[in-house]
Image 1: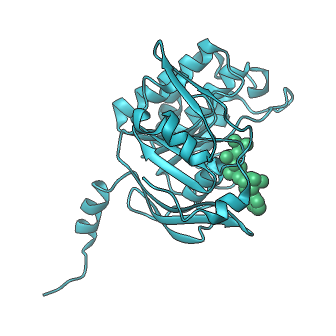
Image 2 (image 1 turned 135 degrees about the vertical axis):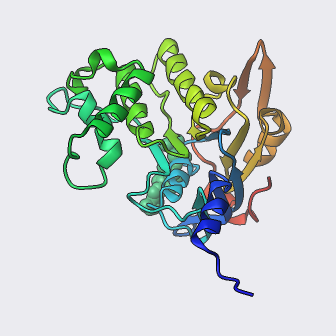
Amino acid sequence: MNTRTTPAVSAVAHASAPALALRDASLRYGRRCLWSGLNLQVEPGEFLAVLGANGSGKTSLLRAILGLQRLDTGTVLVAGHPPRRGRDDIGYVPQQRHVDPLVPLRVRDVVGQGLDGHRWGIGWPGPGRRRKIEAVLDAVGATPFADMPIGLLSGGEQQRVRIAQALVADPKLLLCDEPLLSLDMRSQRTVTALVDRRRRTSDTAVVFVTHEINPVLPYVDRVLYLASGQFRVGSVEQVLNSATLSELYGMPIDVIHTGGRIVVAGLPETAPDADHALAAAGGAA
Ligand SMILES: Nc1ncnc2c1ncn2[C@@H]1O[C@H](COP(=O)(O)OP(=O)(O)OP(=O)(O)O)[C@@H](O)[C@H]1O
């Protein structure tokens, strides 16, 4: 029997592949273990919130998923493929940077970079390209300022443009690195609703790094919590409770669910000591 996988079979297999699969993944910087034994599968349309103190390895996890950071052990597959620069499977909203008001790029050019930013220069104009850009500008409500220089927009408007850039190539997986940082509550709601709409309409899986769970609470399917070189994955109730967080941090943490919000008291400001991380035998799901 011929056991080789034909291209057609392989395409079917990838069509039904999880949006993201991490197998036995670990990452160390020198002696410090950020996380190890990480097994995680994110399905199409799922919303995963990633939480943890400063320095716990959230951005490093996104960089590993993007293929920008080599894992020490394990594998990462995005829609059935190893991540690679130039693939359209992943949309990425990086942490906010200040954009100089003098930067001459128009909003529509910034969004267009999501289609061809990995190639040199701005792509050739064409009706297909233009249509995609117009559609995503409309979806995020950025059409009125599409011809303005990006640096003249407010923080919330810039964030919507970054999301448009990440979505324009129709990714299977959307990675967002603290997209709510320094946004007011109205902009937070706009940004989270945008992301939620896309995963509902297009089955885009979402990995959403945030320090604040409450703005995304209505949308979250599961939480990945990183701390002390360990992790927990599960529903909001399974992970965000006093017993689980106290165990993760090795100190008493109070988690109070009140009025549809979650209040966490006693968290350290930065990731706990690396020696604790080294001693940890890995996370538990
Ligand atoms: N290339 C690198 N080499 C060595 N250490 C690194 C490297 N990149 C990150 N680190 C360290 O790894 C730790 C995790 O960094 P990372 O940016 O992933 O954390 P984070 O959870 O995203 O933090 P924050 O919430 O502050 O954004 C930090 O202590 C950081 O200094």
